[in-house]
Image 1 (tube, helix red, strand yellow):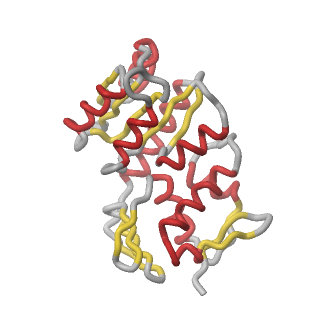
Image 2 (tube, one colour; image 1 turned 90 degrees about the vertical axis):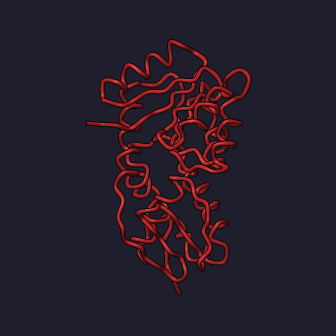
Image 3 (tube, one colour; image 1 turned 120 degrees about the vertical axis):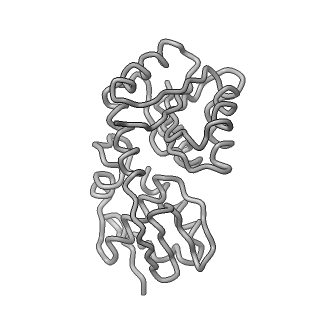
Length: 225
């Protein structure tokens, strides 16, 4: 029996109902907010129970970007952004702020549910194992990363991408292979999404960022030399 709780944030009641109907049939508990301010109010009260947020961009009072920024100050809860705009720059901007998935309206509710299930499945598959790679410490149970003993903040997607690269140390990974294994679904966007994530991860790793090598014409490789 699924006990995961999902917060749906959208100013359109019909959209909230559509998403809610599809998710409740899968056994998820649903919370709703009609604007950004209400979303933050609900999240503050029930953050320990909320496993994922579906967040619209264009809303009254407080837009989705503002809500995202505030939540990301102290929470890594997975967030799927919904937007009526399909511009590449909007998508890249969302990933820079810590979005885990990005879906443009109109979308298939079944696809949305599939992505929700994929994210929650990945976040629930934890291990007590802690591994260290040249000063980069990965704690899978806590889903945390430390560099030389200092914790760094990574979004869910950044964390999964870093772990995938590290676990495939010394192997050149194509962008397609990374998308298939990290994004875990057929991704039809620009592969520069990966480049944006890599850039941000390198920055957060500091000097250790050099271990993520760019393989021209291929993709990336984690290599310690």
